[in-house]
Amino acid sequence: MASQDSHMLIKLVSFFLSTLLVSSEPPCRNFEWIISFGDSLADTGNLIGLSTPNDLPESAFPPYGETFFHYPSGRFSDGRLVIDFIAEFLGLPHVPPFYGSQSGNFEKGVNFAVGGATALECSILEKRGIHCTHGNISLGVQLQSFKEMLPKLCASPSDCRDMIGNALILMGEIGGNDYNYPFFGLQTIEEIKELVPLVVSTISSAITELVEMGGRTFLVPGDFPLGCSVAYLTLYQTSNRVEYDPLTGCLTWLNEFSEYHNEHLQAELDKLRNLYPHVTIIYGDYYNALLRIFEDPAKFGLMNRPLPACCGLGGPYNFNFSIKCGTRGSEYCSDPSKYVNWDGVHLTEAAYRWISEGLLKGPYAIPHLDMSCISSKVKNNESLDTHSII
Image (cartoon, rainbow, N blue to C red; front, side, top):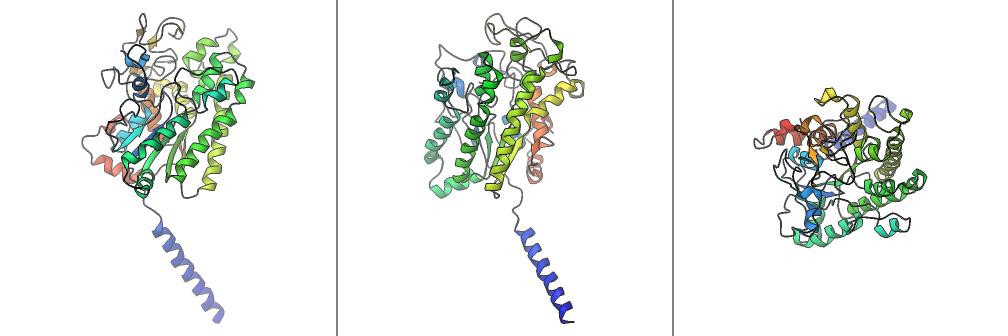
């Protein structure tokens, strides 16, 4: 009898402990801020802010921005980017660029992503014969800029920790240019693969530093399928059909390189999750979110075989390294919503919308980000066009 009583007592204690643990779990988080780092895939105007009037990037000229903003906003697309769709979904304003607008309104977010940025410092790349763009703003520089602006945003270190803790931190996409520069310089894939551990380690170190500053939720995108990029399809064009995926027309060996990077990145994120179990680190599967569009374009309302760029000039992919979109002589399509590739390197708003939906609704965010309370908040926000992504 005593044994049965003891057994019952243990069960009751276990029940109450489990109830306590469940009730103590934090509810899903309503993000108050977005902090963004990265390159041109997330740049909302930083490169323009860093450029002189006589040396502006293509994104400063039409037809960039024509679809949504109706003027060149500094985004390397015809409209919104993934960061814009995420902000809209969270009920937050579009994230303003930091560079060139330090007096701007950063109450709900700040973006440090710069077109052409690398994860690695240029000095590291230069030692390997890889040349960065002039004035490259690496991930380390972006992070330092964030640290230097903090005193203007929060009154005390504890306030700063709270602010960072209540933010969704977008870590990229970053690292793509570390590979673009040597690929465009025709370095061997063996040489470029040697960069992968360095790039992944740099991203990991930045996440670690932000965790120590109070960061609790990170979205870390992987690389897009490079073999579906118009610039790569043009540069590495070959008559050997075996090198192309028969379903998509993409170069398989370049897609395999993207998968190589993504596998290394995911393995590193697993290590960080084990090291910081209180932190949510989400892998954004940009690779498969985009590849599915090339595999079945009709499902997404796109034209069949949507590899050619909407904006460019000449060749089978409407791309020319000498005449880029936004420069004299380039042409652009009448309906960007039917295209995936915008200018040969970047995507259309239509493609970014579908990628965003794949992240926010699944299954391309790993682990899934609990958006239940956020969705309720957004549905009550009549001013937000949620139909654009959900």
